[in-house]
Amino acid sequence: MQSLDAFAGDKLTALDAQSLRRRLKPTRRLDGAVVERDGRRLISFSCNDYLNLSHHPAVRAAAAEAALNYGAGAAASRLVTGDHPLLGDLEKRLARLKGTEAACVFGSGYLANMGVIPTVVGPGDLILIDELAHACIWAGAKLSGARTIAFKHNDIADLQRLLTSERPSARHALVATDGVFSMDGDIAPLDQLSTLCNAHDAWLLSDDAHGVGVLAEGRGSAALFPGAEIPLQMGTLSKALGSYGGYLCGSQAVIDLLKTRARTLVYATGLPPACAAAALASLDIIETQPALTALPLAKARAFTEALGLPPAQSPIVPVVIGSATAALAASAKLEAEGYLVVAIRPPTVPEGTARLRIAFSAAHSDADVMRLADLIADIRRDPAA
Ligand code: PMP
Image (cartoon, rainbow, N blue to C red; front, side):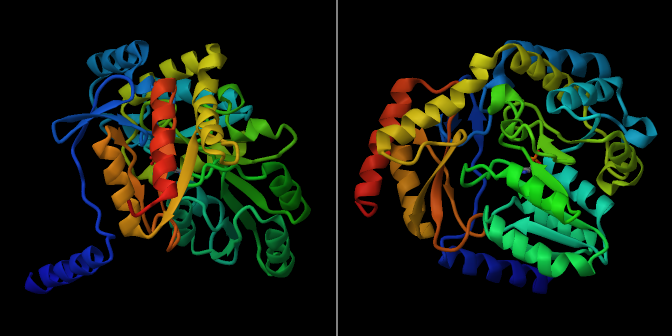
């Protein structure tokens, strides 16, 4: 269709003009933090494989063995024939790690939020979301048909104001936040959010995609706030766990409801057994090696200390540059020095806050962390150089 191609072409031209067009760049991940791109080897500070478990021999062997024994795909929805026993094993382990009654595994973290949110809230209900929460929380909220309002980032007073004015007219209310913010690296005040939610009969959903495996000896951001009640604890298998897939940990009743009603579970093919096997092997490592789980944050802290920045709260450290063009230039400069630090631009981050998002992993050498700090210091001194 000519009109369709013209539409796509016009959109691309407009994005190009604002330095906002994105392009795929084939990247081969090698061992450790090394990646190969355009024939060059680079040290990546842009992977979410915080513990390098995607390349751990035991994790790779578990995935390979499961694929050889049980096939490459799940063949059907979990409710038909795709519920491999490894998924049930994984759910028990995730629930144990998070201290909940039960868990439900989804095809990805994105699918988890897209399935969970519309299962628990709908038209007539209210959703309040931290303005910097991940895109898939917003997608789930939109799909739910519930009235959705953003509250200011980590701003308890703003949330309280909204709950006071908007909660009374809604049947149910959900408050959703990232536990660790994916582009900012800071942590939600889950204790205060929990207290507020209890006071207003609102349900708290925390997305711990970037906390599991790397905070509180691997148990994630919720475990930093022992008194907090978080009935919906979502996460992903695709970052520190080095695999693929998503999950929700919660009460048995909530999990039973998800397994019969969440559309991204009911109508999507089950997670391949190899992904579950890899995640199980990673959990074995995380639960028995607390020193390993502490490394990414320790490296992030060494970096922020070297630069005189506020101490990192998680393995993610943002260096805000401003314009998309300048962020791309900074990223290119680092790439020329052998470091891959991808520029993050709107709409992933708010307008005017394009940034380098640096993700630290157990695989980074201290020398590379310090060399990157020197290069970033130069960029911060003179972004245009
Ligand atoms: N939530 C957050 C905070 C994330 O950063 C991501 C991944 N970018 C997701 C959810 C989605 O998880 P997945 O990649 O498993 O779909």
